Image (cartoon, rainbow, N blue to C red; front, side):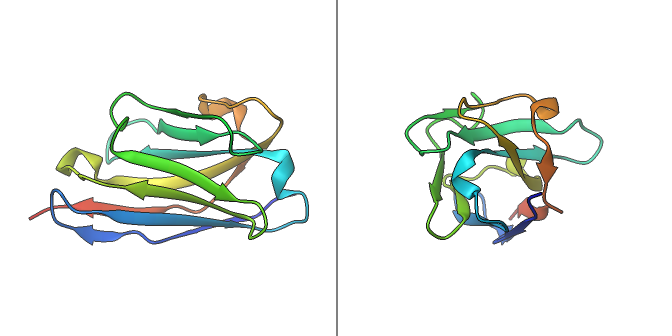
Length: 124
């Protein structure tokens, strides 16, 4: 069982930056593939980024590639999402997700554990 708690959301101007964090409980954090998803009002939850257990492999949605960076610190049981050059269309609730395994995952149904989400609003 893994519990995930996101933090770092907020209101930011277009072009600004935010860093989201996701703290995980448990002693086997390094056994989990981690992902970030987001859900805007009236839309389906969509994949944003994923990172393998070792941090050696990452994958991004086309919409955020080159602007967002996912990373993890297994010693701190934490995964991060660095978001730069933010756009109004990035406004959403951002969710951290985890699943046992090695290979990166991009599909919502592949993940077993979810955080409660953190709101990111990009607006002038």
